[in-house]
Image (cartoon, rainbow over all chains, first blue to last red; front, side, top):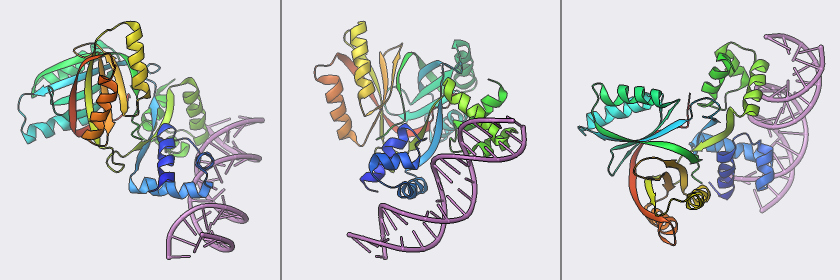
Length: 149
Length: 149
DNA sequence: TATGAAAAGCCGGTAAC
DNA sequence: GTTACCGGCTTTTCATA
């Protein structure tokens, strides 16, 4: 893993549609050389996956809520159960188990407040282990990316 | 935009490497037909972009911190300035302007606590407009995606 | 020996029908 | 939605450090 690899990763995390030729042009390598590196980067897991980023506004799911969740009981079993529920919940874009005020911090994507209310009912009230939760409604998605380089 | 389009989007947001042929096989359409739809979905902006998701652990940037920021002054000018700084900050993966306790909620990706401390110094202390901020260190990235369908 | 460059065959994407 | 053409990707081979 050298500088060229990092340059490839940096370009690919912004635009995965770039052809090997275009990448090669940018970093000064032939197309096949880039292909080889890309293959290795995918195999070793440096590139986890390639995904399409959809437009929340154009698809009518443009309400985002940041939720802080405090659990009632924090045993290993209860934690794992909550994690599993969050992973499978369609509305939950992101879920972090963290230190601080809240045990879990969620990024929830819904169509409107009604759908959000239904979500809280299903996951935070009915027979759940949730002690309390705070909702921050997003007014502006200033920056949204998964870039790490 | 019909059901077939939604099916394509759902598959593409999970894996943008799927060929038109594979997509067509899944949803019962010919490859060129899928191509046509994909082109339109990209042009209309339903698909904003296609990106590579990199592995934070394999690339040594595996510390994530959720930050709540309260500003000193909340005028339009100060808000815009802060937004601009967050957009250009390499460490800031995501930035939301939201209701509730904090004015802004950030997802920050760094290598270690030292780098995080440097980040807070640069953006929250020196001549900034930040009144106070809270840091939640992520112990488990339970779920991280940008899926909206 | 390992790494990048060059050439040929193949697969997927684009455009006309 | 199908067919034909074109371009990019993969693989093999070759050169080089």
